[in-house]
Image (cartoon, rainbow, N blue to C red; front, side, top):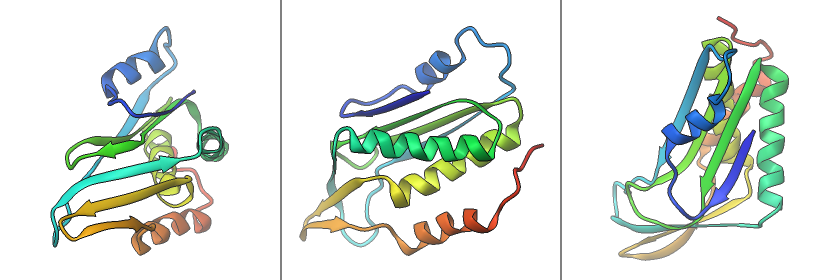
Length: 156
């Protein structure tokens, strides 16, 4: 399992190669790359992400463990960037390996939904109108709650 919090950019293909090295039991790899997007009403100059080292990695490991309890996950990676980022920059990578695509897709989506709502990151957006701290969106909370009602694995 790879869990990294870093300021530098990441190479998703290199991470996939690292996870798959020497393995012949992987039938599916699902990945999600999140990007910093510009704001529709006010141009985003930068987004700054802060975290508490040690605590953040433990929280990400706990989210990963919950995904492994629900789905047949062979291995996974969660890489999240911190520091100052600009629109278009990569911010997060989640890659999940499984024998079957259903498990890989579901676990990847689950991890992202929980990263958006439970991971201890603090985001500050700076625009032409100033800076403000950003909370989880209502839609992120709705997405996370759907997993509370879904008790079945999506094995395909």
